[in-house]
Amino acid sequence: EILFQRLQRSVKIVKSSGIGVSLKSSFAEPFSWFWPGFWGSARRFALIAVSYVGYGAFVRSALPAVVLDECLWWLLSKTQDLFTRKVCALPMILDLVLLPFLDYLHMVPAIFKVALLAFMVYPDHEQSPVLLVLCALAWTGHNCHVTKSTLLE
Image 1: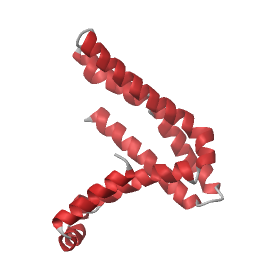
Image 2: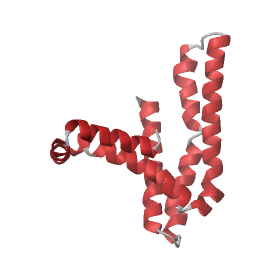
Image 3: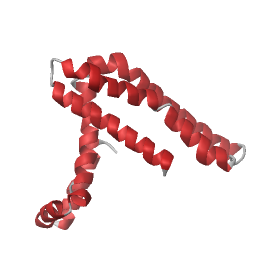
Image 4: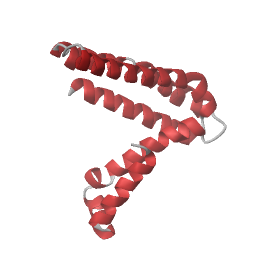
């Protein structure tokens, strides 16, 4: 889901509930009303900010790891799907344990590289260092959360 789609979804929820109810609920229950829409939009904005404002350092250090992660994710899912449809069903241990682990193992370099940008490069950046550090940390935090949720639950 891209940033625009996430914002549209948030606006639809506010429209259906009404602005008054949405604001009241956001103050009464911020983690169930305010946080999902805010975090969903903020982490998508973080990707845009890091790749636009901090593009030089991002392209030099993190982009190769991010592209490798995305390519391996696609390749692994397509191979698994093709093998299951054309050859035979994979054993449960392979399908439910090993392949998800491998799928997130190649994400580690991307997480590490973006975290290094946040701690080592972006604090000294000439354009919006605070924004870039926060965005890189949001990106890293989201990826760590997704990895933990998938592997441990």
